[in-house]
Image 1 (tube, one colour):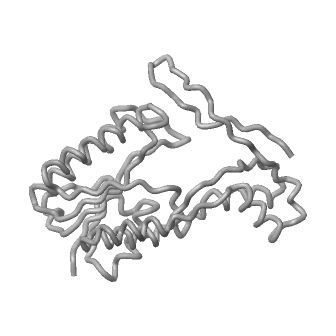
Image 2: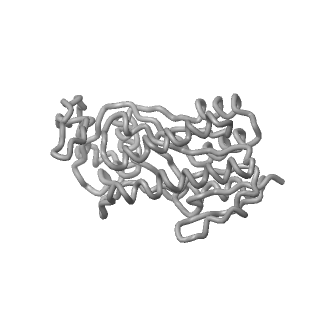
Image 3: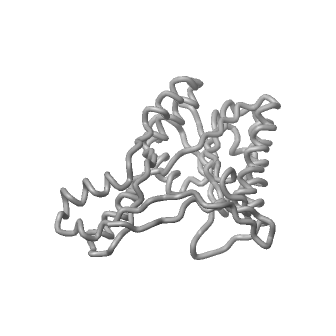
Length: 245
């Protein structure tokens, strides 16, 4: 049985992945507060989920983002290269392409670190996921429909969004670990669920709570002009929302 190390193993995605992969792999874990020893790298593959992400209740500094998203990634890749780990998978973010802030800058640097080790011969796979739906979090659809069912006027944008489940992610990662990149990419592509957000919410409300359809308001998204902040970061506010019945 192959042995894998999962960092961020107690997070929202990591918890599910352990469940889905435990029958096929021996799993080692690394979480915040654990000691990152070289012995942990006697594995066949690493799934590097550990990351610091923005939170509504707390603002992190650039130094904090760099420490986790860049410096920890450097250590993971250094030990992986030193111990001939066959595959390292890093879910990453392209948000830096749309908004340049401390978090986005740290993720851009993480990409560059991964690319450098890839050039040195380490099999580093970076992959970007859309909204991830796990066992305990049902995603934006549930948040919106719950609000409407609770008699809250809710503006829902008429745009296409994409989601993927943690079960599908586990299958994708498993194929990468087994060296079947083409199959992994096909599973990934076929597992993405694309739908119109407004139409999906409307469909659910009509079926499950038709009396509350009056609380559903349609939004229209429009691209805004880039804004340059006082700290010289550039923000591209994705959209402004216009309400219409």
